[in-house]
Image 1 (tube, rainbow, N blue to C red):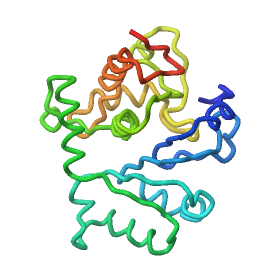
Image 2 (cartoon, rainbow, N blue to C red; image 1 turned 60 degrees about the vertical axis):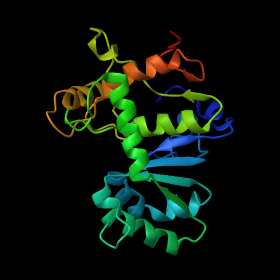
Image 3 (tube, rainbow, N blue to C red; image 1 turned 180 degrees about the vertical axis):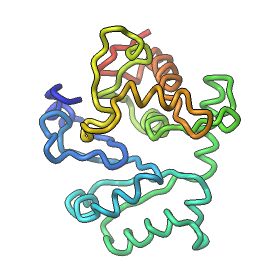
Image 4 (tube, rainbow, N blue to C red; image 1 turned 90 degrees about the vertical axis):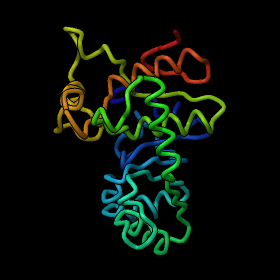
Length: 217
């Protein structure tokens, strides 16, 4: 995303979906500043809480869809993340926060298994926020255009460049380094490369396009 200058192009779309706590301030030229919907992992909710004046004040018209394991999302008073979301909704009455149901998470698990032949839980993998976002976009939008994603083979190329995993965290582990860590994690890792293979397959079906890579087959 950095240096791509796609900000105005992104903002011209009817619906702009961002993930987790990815900021727009200071990065408008490359990522734009319009946010229609944010898909948020349970692990990123504390980031929203710490910056709540921005996310629920300045971006008050944004809708939030939050996913997480049932233990964190219980609605019986014992779900730590769900409780935090309830407090935010009460404090900011204009806020629209939705949570992903257990049934929908199980559906996403089944999609992963159908595409890979592997049981997600038995393989020790966690689906990424990107995977949930991709499924949501494909089910909601007439067409989906994805910015800022590399293909699964990029990091194996001898001359690949080193870029931050998050465009807004230049001092953290670079993208390819993050992929290696997760691919080799025995439990709890995201299978980013595997997910990208799935996206390439979906792109061939017509209503999903990527600015980069230009997957079409």
